[in-house]
Length: 318
Image (cartoon, rainbow, N blue to C red; front, side, top):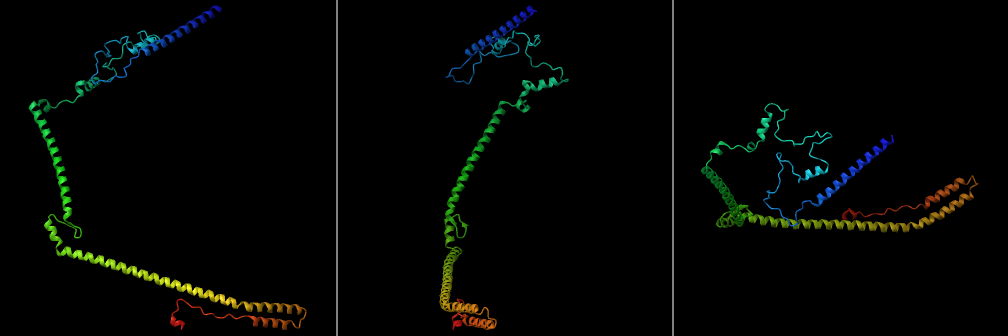
């Protein structure tokens, strides 16, 4: 039992050492590859035509060389050129294109090959194109050039015509009558229009409208001013009437102070009489009559004060 344990420990220890050695070798190889990495100089400028003479092109017919980066990486990862898998059952040769798929139907592969062939990718030339000679090519090119030249000349002429029309419109603005809304082409026609009865009649009518408009505006302003003056006069009359009413009320309040003093004196005497005649049954009615009579005599009558109205005329006041 002890022998088995020691042998198992030795096998696991040897396995770990081999794994660590592989990892160390892989790291060292990566460092070497990075140190030998291809780099372009700083001042390198790409050219239009690339030199492909020394470039290796991959193909299915030639094997990958040992200088290939992918080949190197596979070797560092432990690949020895055999099939992948636990039992090395993987394929070694790459999958080639153009191999017939056994699952396709009859004629499907020929159809795919026909449409993917290089000669069928481009459009087939028509019979006219195939029969076309050099003379036909020259005629066609000449016709296309003539059409292009006609288009250019047409554009130039249209632009020139547009410019001429704009200049003519600017010139004709001088011979345009704003009052009559009429356009003339010649200076003689425009002068004849200015001296015509129609133009002068419209001109006089416009002047008359302007004059009447200014006079009516002045009349409106004058009427508005008069209305404001009348309103101000009414407000002044109302203020005077209110002032007179206040003065009359003050005078009435001054004259009413004397009867108020007499009222207080009579009230005191009545109270004294009530106190003295409180226990006398026979003199109650006479005392009450005296007090009522005194009250009636001391009541001051209100005087009717005439108040002037702002809406009354002078004839009504007279």
